[in-house]
Image 1: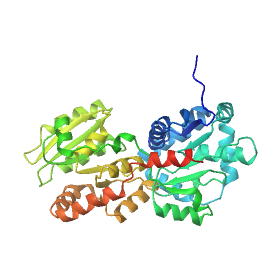
Image 2: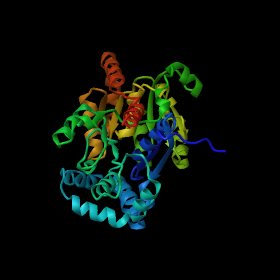
Image 3: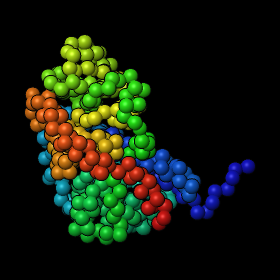
Image 4: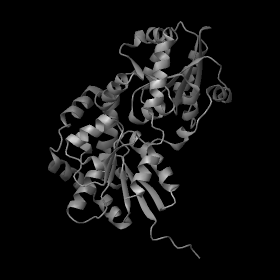
Length: 378
């Protein structure tokens, strides 16, 4: 016989959209924290694009990724042109609703007690349902970048969770009550809350005991990763480089060939697909990456400063500005000077140590717990 569920327990629905990996990763991180809460009877995660028309999925996912990889300047232009608070709502709603009827039907059938959106599309659709009296749970919205683009703004909501106090102030200026805004940080996998000794983690991963640079193919195309590593071979400081090739076997093969050409000052460790990114971050001293919201949050949770390369115009460029302002990152604008820039940083150890301490202060590894505990009290 099934144990009866307490009347106080809640069903939680997490909604993301697979337009870029960050929204999905944030929802999956929150799913773990909600599932562990004693007052949650069920927690599920939906990718809202799976409940839309094929054309809508294509535009949101494939076209977006094509723009990221092939025409980032166009993506940046679209980002800036659509960042107009409280404008074009009727047009946007018409497009979303005409392509999301299966999602609306599934939502009304599931009847959750708590809804958390890590992408703006479902929050906007739910806001319309609440306004028309067809749905009675107002969504919480988790902004997965440091800035809040106008697309995240919705009239009917329970709570906003943001990464920075500056974003909190922005939402207040947009007319949102401060009591409904929390500077939580961006939710990341709970594994990043576990303290890990750097030396012991290096030993576990089979790495040496040098200053360690971490480069991940995630977000970079294959060509740029090779170019980045070719430039890093010019470093004058003795270092080891952990290069994560991800699921690309061809890239891993190329990096293995490249590793055989390194001199005594640079040791290269090519790594394929891994589920141990938190450990590689714990073992490293600096992350060379694009500043996506989730990658940045993971890096900061590990107290890991960043060297920013090729941020996507729009949200990543704004993330980059915040990181540079907080003195937790440097930025390489011209790839041929990448090695020189890192050498220069390492020749001023006081500056690097300040960046490391700033990163520890900037990180919010408990963001997921903050979000869950706040919503379960309401």
